[in-house]
Image (cartoon, rainbow, N blue to C red):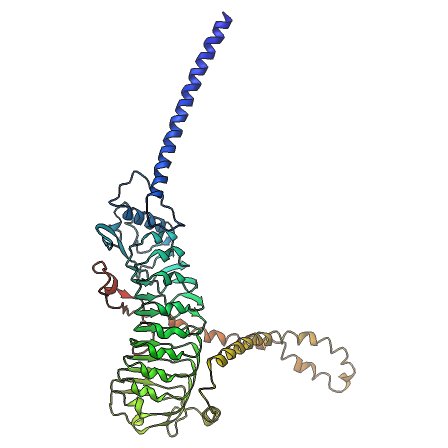
Length: 506
């Protein structure tokens, strides 16, 4: 009887355990099936960056795989948005990505039967966050505009997948790091705007081999020389202002036949102005102000028949301002103040066209008001300059010397600190104290006081000048549309670009 009871109990336990085991297997199979579906979506989505995986709920139905990738990329981007005061991304919910604010869809360029995300425009939204690698999934993007926000960090490498991007505008943000080399992989790019950020380091020469129409790099921290192949660029507008570019302007710049505006202001450029500037027949704006240029204004400037504004102020230019420049047919503004010119041709003193504005303050012009003193003028005006010998290599060396000069400035600060230890030497001074030992310690006292610490405040006034770097309100229009690129309606070239550089005439 006992054996029978044991057998029944054992049978019941076996049945119960088999049922629980069956349930466990079922749940395990279900989870495996779900994960299998998710993994399968990863494998069936083509043209995705190698470092990005698509992980979308398999129950969501999308019109096509491209919109599914866009949904995933935009949702991942939204996760790293830290501040959206205008609630621009509030409607970034659901699978209809074409209805998201700032997202524009159009027919795919390679398949007109498919709708795809063709543009992102989040200009002036005050959004804080960063860019995610998943945005590299948006391989049909024609424009990417996020200027005047608070995005930070670096540009993901996956952006190199945006092969047909036409306009890349990330200006007026807080991006850092070296020049974003992913730009060099955007073979259809026409408009590049990365100004008002914190990019630094060397400018890659490959940039000027691209078929760009507009290059805005101003207000960053680039500190290299201007690449020698700049003349290969097809750009009509190039702005390198407010960086730390050094060395000479390459003579190849004369090859830029399409150049309309060039602004190299507020850098550390040096040497003589190249005669090749005279080959830029279409140029309207030429701004070389606030650099270290020497020598005279090339006579070839008289060939700039389309120029409207020339600004060479705050350099070390000398000689006579010739009438060939002052009488240019379309010239409206010629600023050459803050140099060492000591002569004006007659037609520069009395311009033929009354509407021309000439600013010649702080030069060495005799019988003119607001000029430098003879003491300041004489050493520079009488200094012989041979532009052939003032080469870029020498200028680079001088830059290295200038770097060496910076540390000494710091050493001058510690100098006041050593004087205090000099106080112990007064011990041997007990012998002279009989005569005039007290006066000796008195001179020692002036150095110990932190008299040198006031000098640091002077640098602070030097720092405010960057404050004007804050973008002005007036917008700069993007370049005109290009016939070979299909852009969505009402976006792209019609949208306003970020704040313009603060140079008169631009």
